[in-house]
Image (cartoon, rainbow, N blue to C red):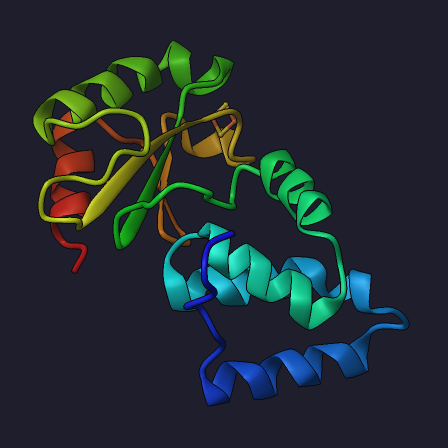
Length: 160
Ligand code: FES
């Protein structure tokens, strides 16, 4: 069993405790808690999952099931910035798949693998719910639409 090295910062522990006051049961606070872990740690490592398991009294296997269900949670190391490129039908009709492939090529990376400088991970997504912006991507939490490869790269290069 690996040693737990992840712990919430003082601020995040206070935020977690505040979450608990919003819900009737501890399990309902799991999703926001995982978001908080990811904010602090960038990804949901084994020791972070074990920490949450102990903190919340939820078996680690149950937490892993939740993580694998949602594509906004990462159980592998990712870059500081997440770029999600839509390759679903509407965006694909406007070149979404080519933009995704072009970005992987430009940044010399593959699905979710952080770029060598650790700045970016690029993720292929199903519909981002913004088809009117097709082809589109989400750079961290910002939607960017009507893309071509050059404008996607321009936007990504602005990320810290
Ligand atoms: S198909 Fe791309 S946002 Fe809906």
